[in-house]
Image 1 (cartoon, rainbow, N blue to C red):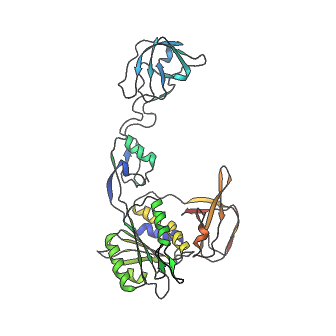
Image 2 (cartoon, helix red, strand yellow):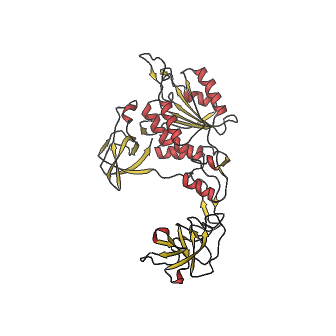
Image 3 (cartoon, helix red, strand yellow):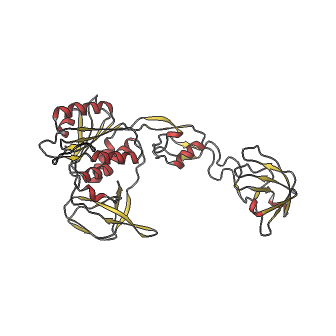
Length: 400
């Protein structure tokens, strides 16, 4: 069986990159950039006033100045030709020619058109003036392909004069539950049935991360129905995320049907607990080319663990996102790992000091015990046992 790290690497090698598309500024948040962004101008593009006040030449050596006019934000640059004068200036305005410092309104008094500096003000060159090109110069690289776009990155793109940017197309995803025992929430349930919950946990995780094109389905443990519905989903979606039907049970038909439909298995089973039976495959025929399938174990804890550890990085790889190393966190207490498998342990992040968080173990009663996940922030990955992992050990941490 593959290790978790080997499974992540195998997924990254086999996913099909999504094609780029041009998207307007208003829809860029959370997208993955597919083109370099360079500064179109110096930033700021002029010596910019940073506070409302008066602007003058610091070398004048004066305490009082006649107000010669106003330099408003968005107005062409004015010229100060008289060292005994000043301009009233507004935040964001271009610094007038002949002025190299700004004293804010709180530090001046104005009487009969004359501005006087407060006694403790020392005028120096550059005071409250943001110099042209201080942030970056025209042509300087700002953003690289693979960047996940947040609010600052979108603002940078807009500041470069671009109304659109090239990003990866969002994947068309379908989340599929399998099993005759599952009943839709809100419907009557028999004693031998359970409510369909895994799909909604997966949907919530995808929505939290900005994936908008997500459908869902529920399929019974029936070969003909599985063949028909999975064929339809492969024709209409880029990514299938299944929950259930991938182990060794009599009615675990998912791997068989996926193979019949032209999805080649990349791996089946990972040396981990929970989530050992996970299955991953990609399209191998002309009709399934570019399709990616993640078939997760049906137990709720296994489903959510495999989603965070493998599916989310796989989706990011398909979008061309730069891969960041896993978060790291220290264990708050010792953990005894018994099986010779990587162990995924749910944890709650708690503050130890202002500068440090610790992972407090919140073990479940088994991979079906999703109620124990309430209040947890994610899970840590511990090395295979048998071993005792002492408190303070720094380990990888993955959020739900």
